Amino acid sequence: MKKESTTISMSDEYGKYASVQRQWANAVALLISSHKATFANLCSSSPKLTILDLGCADGENAIPVLTQLLEAVRPCNPTCKFEIHLDDTLDESVKRAVDRVKGGLSAYTGVEVSGVAKSFYAPVFEAEGVDVAYSVASTHWLSHVPAKHPLCMYVSAEGYRDPVWEDAAQKDIMTFLESRAKELRKGGRLLISTVGLHDKPTEQEEISIQFYKGFRGAIEDALKVTGLEKHIDAVGTFPIYVGHESRMKEIYSKSPWFDLVSFEMIVIDYVPGLTFKTQADGNMEICKGYTKGWTYGFLKSGLECAGVPGEKVQEFLSNLYDVQVPKCYRTLSGQGSGVHTKISAYVLHLVRK
Image (cartoon, rainbow, N blue to C red):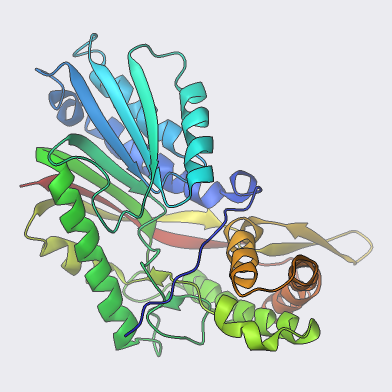
């Protein structure tokens, strides 16, 4: 099957709307804080600790994770140097992340930060050169769109268990793990935090699934209004896979390169897209929120890659976010106080065999 790829440009508003990703980052930081001795031992007899961030985005979410690593190691080895490498697919994002991380860790000495723009579905660092690798809110992005789907992304809820997507997700996870196995030293640690579902989706998870079904419809409506219906393939499905707890645990557990140290499901606050607040006079106040962060750049880039003129792209985006998405929310939440829901995620800790 031919792979479909899209060059994604991160929205300038990513950091503003990335509160969910920050909570995933904090979960990884908490894991490190709870196992300080484990991470300190990685640098107990070495002059340097090499750290790899996979999917660094704008770098903001790397800071709490890296801070915890530094705080874990420094008391045991005050002279240890830290070599930090940030990876993402976009050169512009990596450059921004390097500057942000340097600023966020400026209070620490002996820290070097560099970046590389490369897909993490291949090795991005030298063989056996990494002590700790981590990925926050990134591994749910697949390497390609395996097949078109009625949701914007593939959420493996009841009734939506598409074997093509399931197979593609498993292959991508194994490719990701094999690439990390080449980079990590024996005993090195791999930490992952990303979106997931309980085996029996909670009521809040079902609300999120219904939102993304509605958001797909909102995209289609905005394309029709702006005369861009033929470009549905450029923006209609995102290469995102959200899998169930038991399925994800099974896949990661059978890796031939890693032992699974821990697998934990967490629940975090989530306000997708646009929410509504009912004012005293009964009118609905639209509050822009999370969705405009990553989807805005994805949709914009998809249409630009399809050759749509810039003014038509902006017309589409304006209609989507000002008209169609609010309509989607009214359908989902009635005329009440809007959708303030929660989303589940899993946090993994693996060790290189």
